[in-house]
Image 1 (cartoon, rainbow, N blue to C red):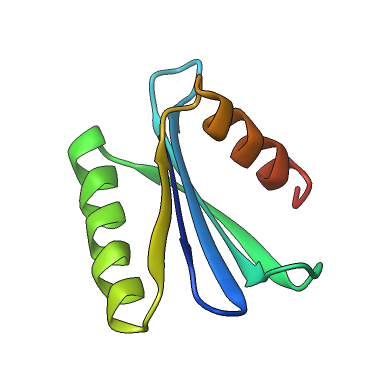
Image 2: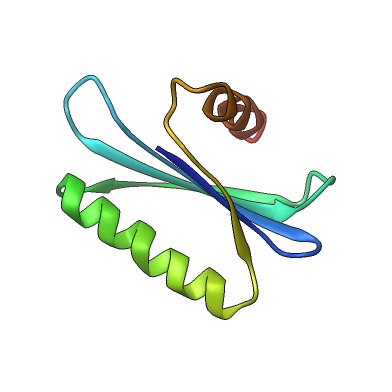
Length: 91
């Protein structure tokens, strides 16, 4: 699952996936649109429910800050693959 929020100049992108051990990995990238400024952080959730709670909490925070959700896709969709390509540039 990939979710992206944007404001006029900034973005926040979250990628949620399972690794080969079955752990849920929550990756969050943020920065200024069109620049290399930003960051990337990874966390291992105790469960899928906890990871979804983190995404829900982040959604409320971003909405309160004036961001709008511009993408909510699965990894295997064209939009999801494009977002993953952008995320991989930050590693």
